[in-house]
Length: 122
Image 1 (spheres, rainbow, N blue to C red):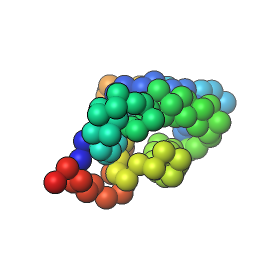
Image 2: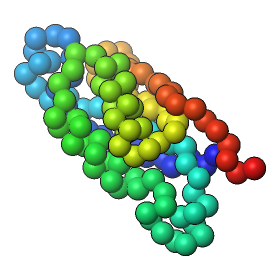
Image 3: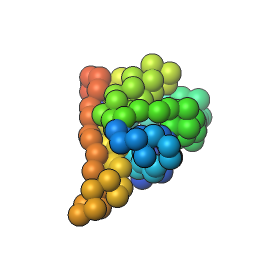
Image 4: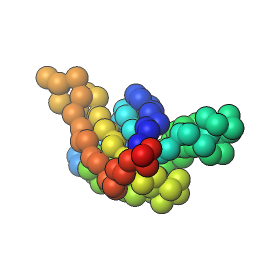
């Protein structure tokens, strides 16, 4: 199975458990790996036959703009479900980082995998 990547996509959203966090927008950084078969798109040089990373990135931005969660885990879980449903993604691996959340760390976050990775290239 081939993979389409979006790396280090920065979004701003309301995220956090503390009262002060509920009044500001904070930066999240998202890495996304999505399974697909790119051969149909490559054969015809046709964007409609693959995962459109520009459209997916725009949808993630809109999702972040409209969301308010306490936990990065909730943000990641719901975003993964939304992307799989809206874009027909059979499997994805997503890392969501929250820079500056812990002063001693560059970032904290979660990495999740959802769906089934099936090799269709055989």
